[in-house]
Image (tube, rainbow, N blue to C red; front, side, top):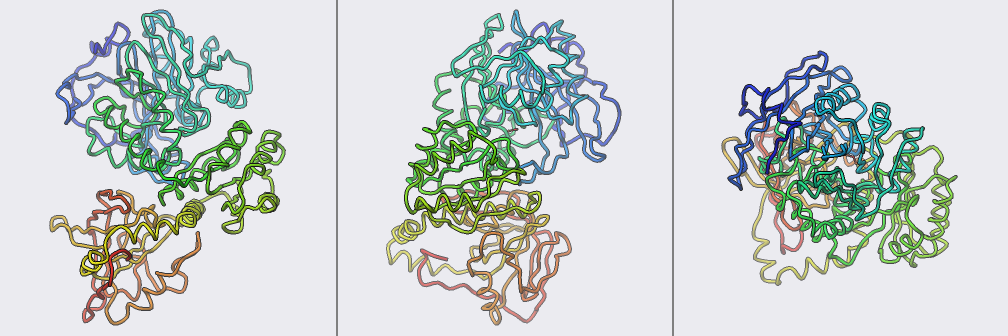
Length: 635
Ligand code: FEO
C-alpha cells in the first residue's frame, strides 16, 4: 500500500532520525505545543514480514493537564491520503467507567484527503483543546485544505468533546452521523450546524475513489455508534470498537503479545455487555474488504486485523449461544445511567449470561417489547420522569414482561429520576420479581458504587442460572473421575485486594508456585467472582496463608454468601500490607504481596500468574492448612 501522498510526504522529507525505541512515555516537560518530527519505531510484526516501512510521525511537546498529567499529540500518515491525529493521554489512570488504566489511553482522530473533499473522522477530548486544534489546523493548512465533512462515530465526549470547537473553526463542514448522534450533537453544540443524518449503506464520495460507506453499529458501545469504511484504502473507522486503553508512541498493533491483555480487558468491560450488537455489527461488515481498523483508542490495528476482529467474533459468539439473557434498559446521556448500566451488564456477563442493552430514550416500543420478551431477566435503570419517550418505553416494558421475570431496578443519579419504588411497584403488579430492593444512590458514584453494581449484576445472572450451573458441574465428569481428581490437594488461603475505596476477599485453594526468578505463583479465580475485577494485570493483592490449627473460623467467614456491596472485612482483624496496602489478616500464618503479571483463560476461570513482591511469616511454628475434598465438581 502506498502510504505517503503529496500532502503527507513532507513529513518524510523533514524526517531526520529513525528511532527504533518504543517509548512508554515522554519526560515530564511543560511548554507550548511546538511540533517536532521523529520517525516511528519500525513496526515489527511477529506474524508478518511486511514491515520495515519507517513511517515518519510528528510529536507535539508534552503539555501538563491538571498539573500532573502529561498530554501530547502525534500526527502521522496511516494509509493513502489518510492521516491520524492521535491525542496521547499518557497518565489517565481511570476511565469514566470503573476500570483503571495502567497505560493511559489515546483518542484517535483521522483526516481523509479525497481528491475533491476532506473529511475529519471524530475529534478528541476537551482537555486537548489547544493541542488538537493546533495539529488539525496545521495539517489542513499544509495540505491546502479546508474541512468539508466531519464524520462523528458517536457522541461520547472523549471523541466528540471538541466537535463544537472544530465547527467554530470550520463552520462550512457538514457533520455526518446517525440520526441519534445528530440529535445528541444538537444538544451539545447549542447552535445550528450543517448536518446529514446517515443510515447504513449511505455513502459520501470525497473524490479520487475515497467513497466512504457508513455502517450502523448501535451499542458499540453507545446507542448512536456507526463505522465508516473508505473503499479506496480499505480502512474502517470504528471508534470505540476494536480499541484498547494503551498509550504508546508506537501507533500500530505490532506487539500483539503485549497488547492482548489490554485488548481483552477493554472488550470485557465495554463490548462484552453488548455481545449481541458485536455479532450483528460483524455480520454487517463481513463483506467489506477492510485491511486496517482505525480505532478510537490505543494502537491502530494494522498487522493483526483478522485475528483481533476474529477474537471479537469468537468471544461474543461464546456468550450469546446460551439460552439465558438479560435486557438492560437504560437512559442514554442521562445522569450515570450509561455507566452504571454497563457496570451491571459487566457483572452479568462475568457469570456467562448475555446482555442486550436497550436505550429507553431512543428504542422503538416494538424493539423494547421484543427484547424484554426474549429475556430471562431485566435490569431497569430509572429514566428521567419528565421524558415522554421514557414513559412510552416503560409502558412497553410493563406490557411485555413475563410473570416471575427477575428484575433489578436502580437509580441513575440524574437529578430527576423516576422514583424507583414506583417502578418496582409497577413491575411487581405485572408479575415480575425483584431480586433485591432497588439500588439507590445518595452520592456521586465512586469505585465502591461500581463494585456494588457489578456484584448485583453477577447475583442476578447467578440467580438465573443456578439450577443449570449445578447440573452442568455434576455432568462435567463421571463420579470416579470426580473422586480421583479430588485427590489433588492444596493449601488454604484467603486472597485480599483493595483499590481506592473498593476491597474484596475470597477463599482460594487452587494455588501453586510457578517460577523461581522472579518468584511467582498462579491462582485460579472463577470468572464470576467479585474479586476478579481487582485482579487484572498490574493489580496487587495479598495471599494470606491459613494455619491448620485455626483456619475454620476464617474459612467460615469468607465462605458465607455476601450481599452485593457488603463489607467482607466486617468483624475481621487486618492491617495494611507494607508494599501494597492490601489487607493482611491477623489470623494468617504467613502472607505474600503479589502483583498480577498475566492471565490465562480457561472456560470458567482465569489462571492468574503473579509475581511475589514482598512477604513474611507471622507464625513460624504453624503449618499451612490443607484443603481436602471428596469430589472435584466443587471447591
Ligand atoms: Fe471512547 Fe465511547 O468513547
